[in-house]
Each structure stands twice: as C-alpha cells, then as structure tokens.
Image (cartoon, rainbow, N blue to C red; front, side, top):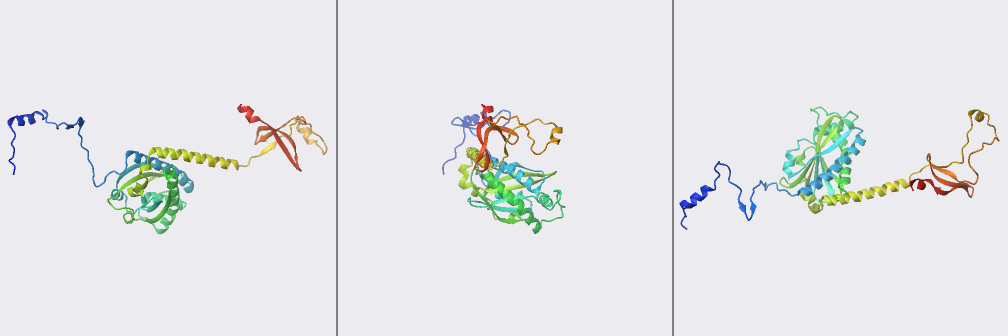
Length: 330
C-alpha cells in the first residue's frame, strides 16, 4: 500500500483562502474557460423529444383541438370548446398515475406507425357528452352513476369524430389512418406500453356549455420513433402550405360545378299602373332598347356582360360580345 500523504500547512492555508468569508457556497469550478453547472437528470424518465419536436407536437394538437371543436359542436348541437392545455413527456406510468379509474379509455393505432396510442376522458366529461347524446342539456350525471355498456356504445360515435380529427391534424406531417383497437373503463388494463417506456402526454380542456372536463392523449416514444426526425416546425409549415393549396384547388373544383342564374335583359319600359290594368291581347309595349345594340346579360342581379341575341337551331341564345366586369377592373 502506498503511504498516505498529509497536507502541509501551506496547502491547508491555500484551501482555507478560497472559502467565502460569509459562509456562502463555493463558486462553480471553471474548466477550460467554461463555468461548470449541475442540473437534475432522472435516468428513469429520460427526455426523448427535443424542444423543437415538442413544439411540433403542440402545433399538431392545437390543430386537432380546432378541428374537434368544429365537428363536435355540429354533431352535439351545443357550444363546445376544446383547447390544448399542455404537452409533456415522461414515462408511461406517470401518465397512468394522473388518470383516475374508472375512466372511459380508447386505444388507437396510427397506421402505418407501430405501437398504440391511448385516449382517456375523465368521468365528468364522458357523462356530459352522454347526457347531450341522450337529448339533455349537457349536464354531469350524478356521482353515483357508473358508465354502462350502453353509455360506451354512445361514446363510440364521439370517438369516431375524434379519430377523424386526429387524422386531419396529422396530415401536414404524415398521412395516418386512426383505427380503434379497444375500449375499456380501466386505463391500467389497456395494453399500450411498458410502465418505464418514454411517452408524450397531451392534455385538453373540453368546455361544453358551462361545464368543463378533461381529455388526455398518451403517445409512446416507440410510436413516433420512425418519424421523430420529421417532427419539426419546418415540416409542419410545408405541410400547412401544401394543405392550403389542396384546399384551394378543391374549393375551385366545387365552385366550377355551382349553378348560377344567367338572364338576358331585353329592355325596360316605364308604364303607369293604370295602363297596366287596361292592357289587352295584342297591345305593344315600347322598350328602351335599340334593335341592333347588344343586350345586358345578368348574373343574378348584376350586369356582367353585353350580348347579341339570336338562335341556335330551335333554341334562343345570346352571344357574349363584351365583358363589363373586365372594364370595371381595368
């Protein structure tokens, strides 16, 4: 064994000299010009997603909340507001600990992604939706009421709207097909991930009339791992632009199939009411239109074109000779 070395008085004095005189903590050590700092890191729940990826997930689910607000308001015929509350990451067991039991829970698959995703309502939210589906005003059912099989069947219609909203919200990043795997009232029995698996939790507030409830989505890291490199705001913005272009093209295609009322104004005449009462068969009304001048062509109630009347075979027709709208814009 090597002999233990004792400090000299000079070395002891040097150590005492660096201690703060007021008894405060020692300054951080400086190594190669950088101040060393320590931060807490939980090895049981490591962060799998960067801040940029979390921001992208937030944008996706804000879009989801807007779409679900619109579709559920129309379906339930009530004022509904769904808003994103938080996006956090941790272990799957952390998510389960924040979900009360029983809670109506649905397990989805985001095909073609692997793994499963969990959606959970609190009981109050489920009871409010069920009351509205049963024709009520959307009030929480009494505390003694338990969610029955019939209630779960009623909730399936709402789950379908949620699945559709999820698909539309993810379209800017990845085209997914959301399919229901199972439903249960016990979240801990849902086979989604191992307790220690990393996951991201998305919480929503659902306001139905004057009542408020919560809805949560848990996406394990294993589900998003194949596309984690695509979870960036740049991908989202590119997808948003692409979707806007598709929407504009679709809107234009629908507009082209819209029928409008097109009429040709042959002329006008000022006639008093007494003359109208005395009109007989064979009487002639003189219009203010000249025979060889073009006639105004009406779109709805607006004059948009000038046209020359004529026939095509046995059908009356009018030939467009001038565009009034083009003159106005020019």
